[in-house]
Length: 234
Length: 405
Image (cartoon, rainbow over all chains, first blue to last red; front, side):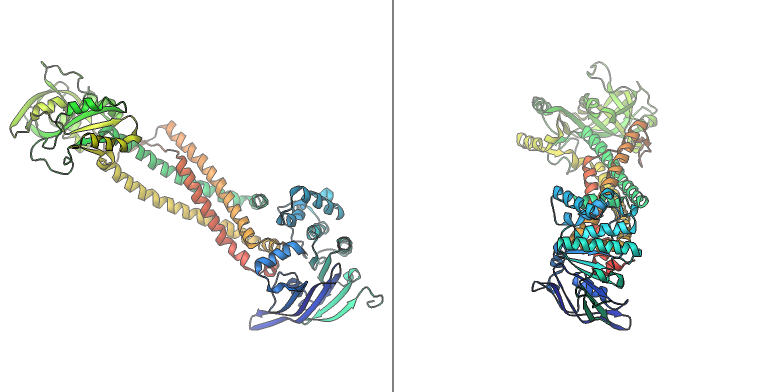
């Protein structure tokens, strides 16, 4: 069943002399529990499409349908409420809050949702164990390696059990081995929680973790591969 | 609570900047507290001085302060002793002191000069306290010796002008209430200083009965009513005017011209100073908040992406600034309290004000009211500064904020 459907998305930016069209009639859909990877070269519009699907950017035209509700028609406040409840984010440079401990960073989305303290402790400790950093709970991001930071960021994204995770270049700041480990961990946790995940990357090594791969170029999806069917992608 | 903890943690990001801002706020609050504390001390001293000089209420004929007298004590009070006796039955009234204001000529036999006289009660030193300075000799005797000369206290300058010393004999001349010329021989009992050199050249003080004898009248100019509790002033003003419908009870504030002039002047001076200090505090906090926002734009984007509302992000920065304001203010209170105690122990003297001979102790009151108002003002300013500073951060789109380097 389709969780999110993007239809006819157009987005342009002011680029000095004139407008630059970044997305032109782009669209995608993602089902519950599915991991969809958006591949494409720099400037192809994959991150912009991801941001619009994650409601952190607006579109000039088009629809983002979530159970038949067009999310782009929501007010700024309602979009924030929606993100708070339903979407988790993993960023390229982790974007952890430097003054907070690993525990507090993971707990932050739950505090925004006003979870009771005991429940937060239980849930965060479970997540930290799952990402293998239970003994680093009191560490601050500055005391952790890049891979550990990204695992904390994954725990933060998953802690509220969102229906969708938006991950923009989640492995770009990591070395090859760590990138594979982090992606494997993300996939494992997502499957366990039945969370859908939309990943933008230019790293083709992440394709094996995907259920589907969308190739974006010149502002729209040019190819789509179903990775669950053997032999489609070599 | 979560935002409060996060705000507290954020203050530790750039400790040097936080400390510098905190000290600037502390200095500002100390400045406000000490200047207003000095003004409060001055007001309190002048209030005390004025009340001691006249009493909280001054009972006179209704026209006494507004009309010029055609002859001495035209607007004086009759039966003052009866009124005084009646009022002293009231336990809330500690003293009722009559006084007679008069003027005339004083002569040492060789030289005559004009004087401004005041007939006073022997209890006057009890209410005037340290504000009545007899620099040589003694105050007027409690019971006048009928066989001896009348007593006089001369202003320092007047004594010098007449070459008078303690025990010198002088003659006072004045018009009586009937318009005749009268004279009385007096002996110098003491020399006093009013603190105002020009006043000291003309001023003298005699017993009420001496002034009445000279003016050939039973009247007094006014009765000073000294209440045990100044809070009862308004209540007693009404009571007195009901009790004595032919007389008027004037509050001391209406006659304390110097007090009102100083208060008006200081209110303006220290008001402007306070305003300047608060503007400085505003800029300091704004600067700190603005730098903090610029350094944390990407973080603002992250918080927004995670679901923090704009209002929550504004609140975070406002709480940070508010905490700075609170800590700075508390430091300022401690500093101003230390200055207040230090000045009390050090006994620093202020130079004499223009036209006066005596300085006065430099003291600074620590006022809890002013502390609360300062804290509120600094907190409001801190929140406003944070609000202006954070606008840039929250007005960017989230994706722009996340890309911000």
